[in-house]
Length: 492
Image (cartoon, rainbow, N blue to C red; front, side, top):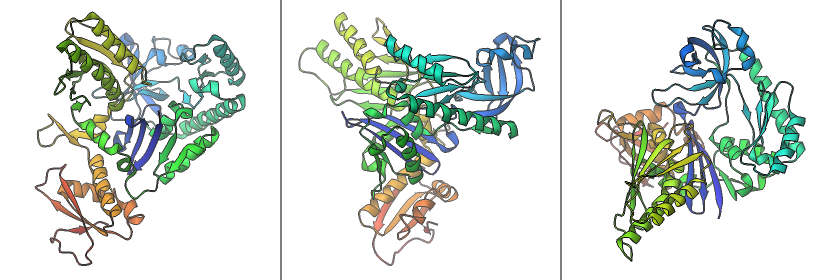
């Protein structure tokens, strides 16, 4: 089965995707002002201490203060505050790393035990711990890697050998350990001169994170459209001798549209997911959990009702595993499978779901099936789900629904314009909502393309106050003289 990666930028938004065969299985988005901050290191100040909860609140430059638990503080600092069971006191300035990004009304979870993640190693500057990934089960291999960690570890610090480390030679591991150490020392220098709330170290963007976490040996091609990203990915792939897999995409159409990825991403805004058999799934997200309902739809099967229901549930189990991974749904998930009479069928559906979820890099745990056919499982929640990144609260229904986010909508408009130019048109005429037009101009979303690949083209935008935010039209015209309304504006 072919496995490909796709990386691009649009404005401040960083896109990354992973396909297996013909299916999109992972989509990652660092979206401008909603960027993922997990892994970032900040200079913070303790603003409150709650001994009863064994936690402290830390101001670190974000909208909400972060949580710092006792277990995430260095043990050797216990004597710093003898009057408290915690290792910090109000007013202390601390170097903190985000281990869990803020979600909803909850602030970020922080740790003073900072770590630096590489392809093969995790460097722990202030934690004298040596370990090996739990995914490496062979005892001899674990012992070998632990011996490597002992030779590589710096005084006072620790190392964790990641799954990929077993394929690396000692020289590669030594170079990476030295590289991670240098990053830490640089962060320390930045921290000394930083103000409270300043970013001390920025974790990798979505591209580098995906390359770091996925086994690149199993990847066929890595397509990169953005030039700056291409150079960054090229440097990383050189260190692991995988540069031959890198492809610079320079096609006329937008890359995510050319490979059919954008169509799949747009489907994430829909609550209904069609199965190839005619059955379908319905997703309903609440604050506490995500509910998924399985329906036979137009699928009638070929035999009796029990066999039809069983076949539908098997297909649903596979697609549910793909969708929670693709949508990046975390926390509790409850699935309402269609009721089955056969215990053998019920067990088979659970087994199918468990096996399908094993393909997910996020930790999943299936609890079982109730008498009503409800299955509960959990998926580790590390950042916002993708739906919340490509939509925003609906301004028309006062927040009870959602519409496409400004940046994602602008991205779809860019795709439509680029498709016109790929078909040979010299002029593009876009009619769109007046607010979206002002946003595109104000944030210079298309300025790079206008100055570069579109420099010989003309783009006219006609804003309408009555247009729904999501509605727009794009048409091409090759006439040298155009008849346009008075409010038409030449872009930039």
